[in-house]
Image (tube, rainbow, N blue to C red; front, side, top):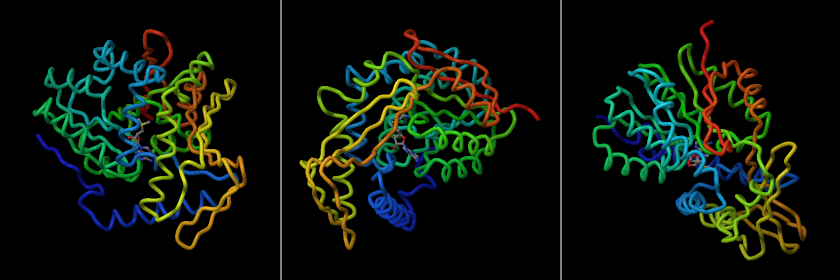
Length: 331
Ligand SMILES: C[S@@+](CC[C@H](N)C(=O)[O-])C[C@H]1O[C@@H](n2cnc3c(N)ncnc32)[C@H](O)[C@@H]1O
C-alpha cells in the first residue's frame, strides 16, 4: 500500500504562495472585467467543501443521487468496462469520493491491481477522502495529488506505470462553457495513450423546473455556497465585501443547457481589496458558475471533436444522468 498527499501543495510552501498569487490575480482580473466574474474553482475552501457536501444531501440536488444510483447499482458494469488490472484510476476533481468509493470497494474486494490517484484543488477535501478510504479499505493504494487539473494530471502521468483510467464525475465537465470543455477534453486526450479510457459524468437535459430547483434550493445552501467565495476573498485577500449586500440568482436555459449562478449587488457600492477598488452598480451581477446540461448527441460530438471514441453510456434508472465511456483509439 502507498498513500499520501504528494507532490501537491500541502508539503510545498512555494506552491502555496504561487496558488495564493494566482487566486489574487484571478480575482482582480474577474472583478475588473465586464461582466464581473469569479472562477468557480475557488468556491472550494474548507467551508465551501462542507457546504458542497450539504448541497449533495439536498432533496432537490438530484445529481448526486442519480450518479450514486449508477455507482451503487451498476458497479459491475463499470468494473467490467474498466477491465483487468493493473491500471491507475485517476479522478479529476474527486471531492469527497462519496460515489467513487463504491467502485473502489468493488475493485478492492476482487483484489484488482490498481492505484487510485484522486486530484483536487482542495487539499482539505483530499485529506477527508484519504482518511475515509484508509479507514474503510486499509489495503487500498492511493496517491493524492493536490492542485489544478492538468498540473496534477501531468504529475499523475509521470508517476503512472500502467494503463490509465480517468474518472471525472458529478457535474465537473459541466462547469465549463462549450469552448472551455472542448479545449479541456482535447488537452486530456493529448495526455493519454491508446488503450487508456475516460469515464465522464454528464448531467442530462431534463425538465427545466427540476434542473432549476436543484441549484436554487429552498434552504438557500447554494446561495451560502456562492456567497462563501466573497467571504474567502475577504479572509484571504483582505477585501471588505459585505455579504448582506449580495444575493444569489440562478437561471436555466433549456436550449443551451446552461444553468448559471450569479451574485447580484443589492445596492450601488464599492468594495476594497488592498489597493484595488471595485465599483458595483445596483443590480449588477458577478457571474459565478455554469453547470451545463447535455443531450447524448452533444456528448458524442464532444468526444469526437476531442479525439475520443464514445463507446458506452451508463445511465441511472431515471435516465437523468450518464457516466459515459470514452476510449483512446489505436492509431
Ligand atoms: C462539484 S464538486 C464535484 C466533486 C466530485 N467529482 C463529485 O462528483 O462528487 C467539484 C470538485 O472539483 C474540484 N475542482 C474544481 N475545479 C478544479 C480544478 N480546476 N482543478 C482541480 N480540482 C478542481 C473542487 O475542489 C471539488 O472538489
